[in-house]
Image 1: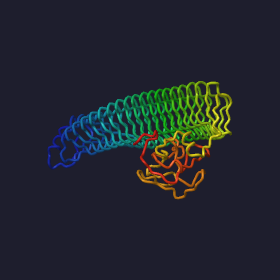
Image 2: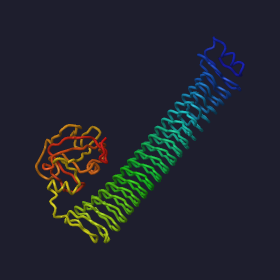
Image 3: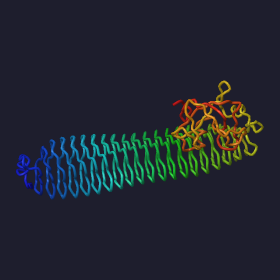
Image 4: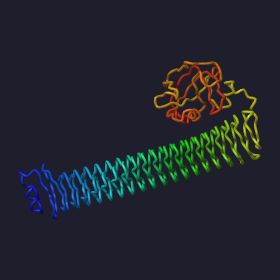
Length: 500
């Protein structure tokens, strides 16, 4: 039944014989409970209030609904239809084509937004579940939640304690701030500003994040992702592909940076765990820690009380000064200049320190390693194939004749080569050979982060005990490692060696 004014609409709602109501053209004041009737609103019809348990199946054409509230439900909004306010516990199921919703708030829910639809404001505890195609959401704030954003959808502002759970495809989020949270960002998604105590959990594909600050946290960034600014107590856990991070400071932490990634500034008490491929780090200072630098990576400045654990392959560090500590420098790695109260604990392989000032202490383990200046402690005469000597030099814990060593494995407790290390069980090498060559045994390192350098895809770390006397050190470059024939997997630990 077609209606063209409020009186006809009220009569149609009251008539039990009417099952379908078409609201076409005209101005209407209110649509209340609709019962089991099917309601369509289209053409240029305008309804000021849709309330109670009213249900409208379709709003389309150039129709306008000014207010949707109570537990009212609109199932489809499309064409160039406009809904101005959606609030209380009202629900809109589908918004598409070039439809526009101006305000969504209270505990209102919009389930799907797609096509070129636009939602201008989402706030309070309102929820939007899916946003895709070229749909646009302009403002998301308070504790509002958007669960899925994909296609080429755009969200322009996210603030308050708003949460966006999934962002994919070529989706774009322009501003995220206050305590907002974005959980997944992938495809070619772009996030331009993230601040307050915002958290972004996963960013990948060719995603770009331009600004992240305050206590923001980014958990995974990979492929060709770019992060421009990360500061205050921000944390970035994984950066890969050709990713670039321009500024990281205060107590920021970066855990993995690899391939051709570039980090420009790292300072405060920042920590960088792994840097490899052709990665470049320009400035590291304060009490920063870098665990592994390898490939053709370059670090330009390291200062303060910074610690660098491993420098190898053809990696280059240009300047290390103040009270910095470098644990391992080996292969063909180069340090251009070292000054201040710096200690280089292991200089091995064909590694080179071009210039060291008088206060620098360098402990040299290979005759091929080159040092100019500094205070060199020559330990090249040590027999590092002797298990007891190797264990002492590398700080291996020994308990009742058992060496405590570590293995990096995948989620399924299997090594890079597919050998399984079940926790609590004794493992035996099927191909054991009594030599100090790589291969022919099960390989372990003195510390989990050293074991991780041999499998960058490892996600778990195991504590293993084996006979010290039967251990066979392997001194062929890379982080310290040895092999064993039989040993027991004691427990799972973190990358820092703490029990899980």
